Amino acid sequence: MTQGLAADVIVVGAGIIGAACAQALARRGLDVLVLDAGLPGATAAGMGHLLVLDDNPAELALSQYSLQRWRDIARNLPEGCAYRSNGTLWLAANAEEMAVAEHKHANLRAHGVICQLVGAPRLCEREPLLREGLEGGLLIEDDGILYAPATARWMLDQPRIRQRQARVAEVDGARVRLDDGQWLAATAVVLANGIQATELCPELPIQPKKGHLLITDRYPGQVTHTLVELGYVTSAHNASGPSAACNIQPRPTGQLFIGASRQFGTTDPQVEGWMLARMLKRATEYVPALAQLNAIRAWTGFRAASPDGLPLVGQHPQRPGLWLAVGHEGLGVTTAPATADLLVAQLFDEHPPLAAQAYLPQRFLGEPTHA
Amino acid sequence: MPELTLDGRALRVAEGTSVAAALALAGDGCTRTSVSGQRRAPLCGMGICQECRVSIDGRRRLACQTLCRDGMQVETRA
Ligand SMILES: Cc1cc2nc3c(=O)[nH]c(=O)nc-3n(C[C@H](O)[C@H](O)[C@H](O)COP(=O)(O)OP(=O)(O)OC[C@H]3O[C@@H](n4cnc5c(N)ncnc54)[C@H](O)[C@@H]3O)c2cc1C
Ligand code: FES
Image (cartoon, rainbow over all chains, first blue to last red; front, side, top):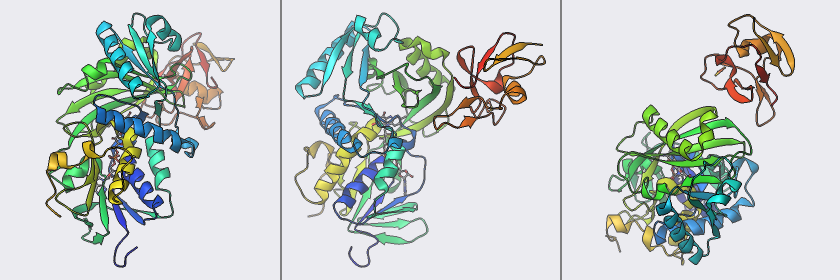
């Protein structure tokens, strides 16, 4: 570490993204200082579903690479991180959605993702609680789940990483000012502070997208795969108004996680009854027996949405020394390993493991003003 | 005076007794065993904390929010 510097690299944010970046940097032999203000972040609020998504080629590349990395990481993960490779079962309610499933199947297969179409009769064999009359589904076998907050803590538990609870009030290239006025300098600063990124860099095109979640009491063995409706592709992703889609995830404890809702234009963390009701109603349209279960908690969280749904990973084009790892929307737990690897490759000026172009901040912020 | 079964044992309680109160009277006061194997008991007594989850006639309910009824089967070790 160079004299006078607080660390080689300062990472702002100790969520799953900051933690993955810090771990990757520390493994390269750098001393890393992680600053976190202790605000309620997306990592603690989210579902931790590890899934391949293919709305566009860049999203598929990022998620597929990450799923492979998670499988490697999982070998060393402590049990508390609750990693499971339980697969995702995408559900088609009608012929139109089944056509989406078939298209998705072909696309994923072409990219080497292990998946299979499941016809209506086999659907209820695999998941007996599903209602009758669904058209079919698509099973993606290597998708998984993770308890992200524990995983972030595990990633940060490294000799070369120091953690400090502090709120960053200003970033200036490779320096940060804490809210007590103290300046800390490094050779690089990584901004990984989720939806709060715009407080430090107002020029970032990031918007909070609110989500509700609910967890039930323990009902072991009732649901095996993470059940997601394919209407998700058409309704939730593309709508600008409030929307809800069926997303049911079995936790290793036997509890069921139920999501997912999406709302723009609010930063109020309050659980909203009407939105929760709409979300639960949607879930019971696929698994009617849910209505008989006892829920124990509901809460909300905010996804950091960029205009194209992809994260911003790379150096800030107008603020040399400041590196961005933000805008991971509803997929940041999944895409944390790819984000960390892309960031490290760019910091070390190496060939990245997947093409970096689609995730560069330049696409929103313009070309670099520095040499 | 409803008569219910608590972990296989018959118990008669006064009208208006909650399942949580019945457990305190006649059981170990606990409603369930947690993932980590600990026995858990009612805490808030008003339907908020969810600590008092218990199996009643095969369904998960809150012991503090459920009144004892004739013939009820309460299982704290299910
Ligand atoms: C309801 C919901 C469901 C989701 N489901 C999934 C899912 O199933 N699968 C999936 O892959 N992803 C999911 N996500 C998305 C995923 O959770 C996020 O993309 C991911 O957690 C983002 O991590 P992060 O580290 O960027 O941000 P955060 O976890 O938000 O962490 C940011 C950190 O920065 C800190 N911070 C902020 N400002 C400052 C400051 N000025 N100074 C110091 N520290 C600061 C905060 O304290 C916080 O700890 C979901 C998100 C939500 C909201
Ligand atoms: S004791 Fe708290 S909900 Fe019953």
